[in-house]
Length: 512
Image 1 (cartoon, rainbow, N blue to C red):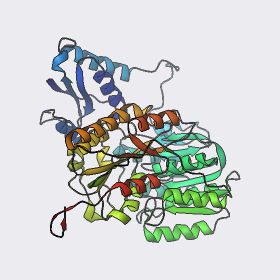
Image 2 (image 1 turned 30 degrees about the vertical axis):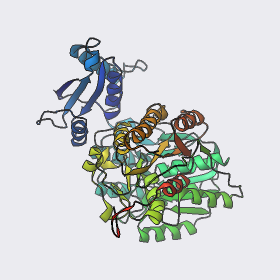
Image 3 (image 1 turned 120 degrees about the horizontal axis):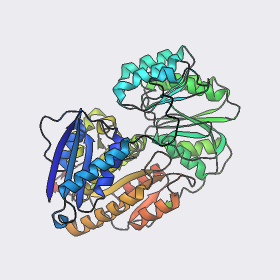
């Protein structure tokens, strides 16, 4: 193999564009690996794990071009040819769009773009986190609702933004708001759902999508889904956007029932929001994740209030009959799905180590995640956590880090069961099974070859029949690769937990 690493100083492109560039170059015959990325600390760490030797003076203002050419194909592509492929892909990514009137310069700021905008215009902010506050505040001061898709926004800026919004009766969705459905239109990562009577307020992205998908499976539609950001029910933010969103849905004649979903909230904020919800005219089902509350159970409770029978939640594939001792490894793209899985699994398996731990004692740092160093404990990783998305696209778009972790995990003899999630809908990968299904098959083959055992892979598939990725095709591909696929994350987790046999003691009275 031949490695090439170079820096291009003063050149910038966003992470999604660079992901597409990397994919295009990697598809060039003779190119084994291609990573074109801004030189953020996370990306440098990822390149180091991949074995690339990046110059020590690389900074976030540099673009890194890292190529690995397959020696067996050196006659197929030269380094010059591979670099030409990089240049061509970058040029295509930065080319102006063909349509539109170029005679009028586009607005240069959020404020100027809103001068003549209709009152109901919603502003979506999707810029690097440190730059998001100014753009979002522009929208709030202009009197518009805003969805802040950006992550890595400082907490004090979120509080200031939501304080300003409260004085103007403006709804701030986010920061780090990945999912919303407003006026029948999905924003961010959103499933295609039918119109209906249920409104959703969510301090949770993939939690929202799980509920939307289960409601769709039960034949129930949605009036709106308003994300409020994962920290909104924290003690610092105090549920400011949650109150505004609940009030909006209470006033919406199309909404007859509301479900509020959140990762484990601050207890005092949960009490205050619960009291506020009881003061509304519309009934509110609270799905606040805890050891006793999961997303599927919350959805089933909501269906009961709607007098809609709960269906048997769908599964695809064949469960493995053989399992062995070892550890449960959860590799998630959805933070709420990861949280829910930990809450479910902890009850049977005890502490779970994670980069988003339930308690500080179980914390796993990002460097260990990137290096595939998961130790000999039960582990669940959220690859969408802020620390793993600096300068990179979200793992629902860019699966690189999770696929690498899956390969590491399969090669670890301590791994008894792998638990994954796949989330469909607009904004997500157009065909996640295209890369994940072969990786699952490879993982099972690796475990069989290196350790002579079956490696069960359990997948939660979140999506609706109308999603662009084709739910049935995705499920069939994953099942064909050997995964047992669930539509309910709680059911998938309980199944995975049941497959984990105790690890034999290595010394008298001591389990490994």
